[in-house]
Amino acid sequence: VYNILNSRLPSNYINTISPDKDGNTWIGTLNGLVKIAADASWTVFLTTNSGLPSNNINSIVHDAAGTVWIGTKKGLAKYAGSVWKAYHSSSANFPKGFAFPNDTVNYVTLDSSQNLWLATNHGLVKYNRANSWTLYNTENSGLIDNYINTVGIDKSGNILLGTKDKGLAKFDGISKWDYYNSYNTLLPGNDIQAIAVDSAGIKWLCSVKGLVFFKDTAY
Image (cartoon, rainbow, N blue to C red; front, top):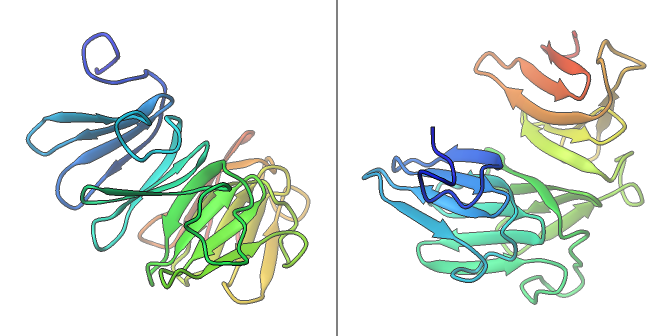
């Protein structure tokens, strides 16, 4: 057991853990980002010694190139080798005309084309690596809840969104939106905290009122 008393962990509150392809383990805490290397050495990244916009780390994902993408309470961070870049409402790293909807990035994931999908408190954001950013919200799309807790990708490439109050949203990435909630399915609650898709394509949803799994639309 590792804690703040017997290790370099900056906080006992662990939000996320993500291993990379090189055998390193990345840990997101309430007070910093930790990298435990394959050789068991520890590195702690804080706002004071890195390009992190916040020490409160919500989510971590690694792309095919080995770049680390970190969702924080104050925006998104990109860590490539030794180079940091931050994306938040007051940064200049967006193309003209795009405004980051909310600095709280609850979750970050990648689809099979290496597009980045961000769950925020004010909508869904897609980044396609050609410095093209797209915001989906209740005003410009079929999204019915801007508060998104988490994002998953199913075997067909659909984007699965766990919302704060409206259940599960399924987006085909183009224009089709479907919704599953406690009123039209057997979901026990509409606040979806986590989504996982296993090797058989079964979707596992963690809500504040229990765990449910489904294949296709059968709960």
